[in-house]
Length: 83
Picture 1 (cartoon, rainbow, N blue to C red):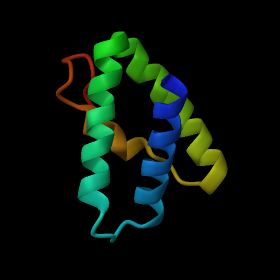
Picture 2 (picture 1 turned 135 degrees about the horizontal axis):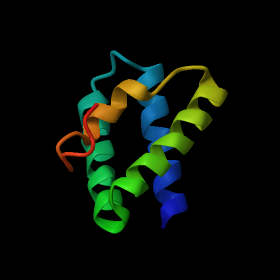
Picture 3 (picture 1 turned 120 degrees about the horizontal axis):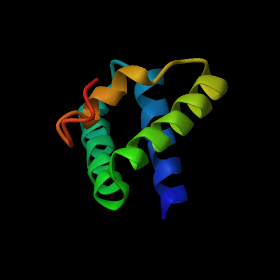
C-alpha cells in the first residue's frame, strides 16, 4: 500500500508543479491532504517525514522542481508538522 500511495503522491505533486494554473489544483491538493491523513494515521510523524523525503528527492530528480511548498498541505495533522 505504501508504494501505491507514494506513486500517487508523486503523480499528484508532479502535476501540481508542472501545471500551476490548472483548475484541477484544488482537487489534487485535497487528495494530497487525504493521503497525509492516511499516512499519519498509519505511521505518525515518522511516516510523513519519510514519505516527504522520498517524494522530494524523486520529484527534484525527475522534473527539477522542488515540492517543498506542498508540505504545508499536511499542516494541522499534528502539532509536530508545521511548514
